[in-house]
Length: 185
Length: 40
Image 1 (cartoon, each protein chain N blue to C red):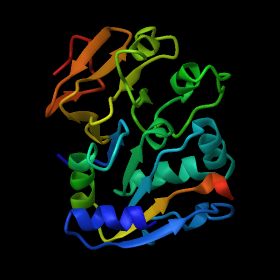
Image 2: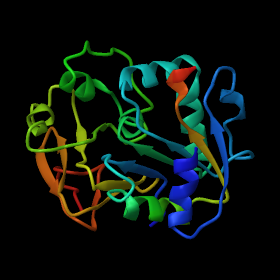
Image 3: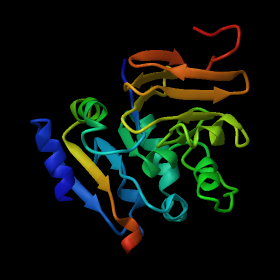
Image 4: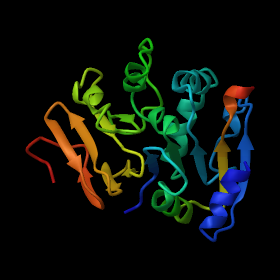
């Protein structure tokens, strides 16, 4: 937890931080009365993180939390589990695909972190459906009510759906619900 | 703009500084950190 409080201090801010390591039987307490925001860090094993959160009923609670105007941050594997599926991660690691959805909070998009020249062919294959690819040093902000995605970062990101590939540039905002169709803005 | 989901592509604290800053300034006071769950 020290790294997290140190990180907050870097921004000259003060927060009340709670840390959950054992999440068994805690999903009921994950609500807006108790928290304003949730930070989910990376994991070396994304499928295990997914399994833990799913088995402990956290995904439905995340949806309610967002609906009630809470904020959720996902970094690396923590970002992947906020998308539709973690299967792009599974493909990269040559691991079996996972049948069930992840948190599915990003429209119909999966999220693929650590995007680089070596692994971008994985998402360009589009084998697991719509996907947002984010390199290290890049980040996406989603407004799920307005279906708006804003990209920040100097290395470009990518957003891929049935209509093709869009490169995401620094401080670019796109309505992700209409990418590629005639109503795109 | 009122973003509610923040996605980082990974990397160091320095890499994600801008995104972290936007998140921390938008977040209220009470933050839940889900971390090291797989060690349990």
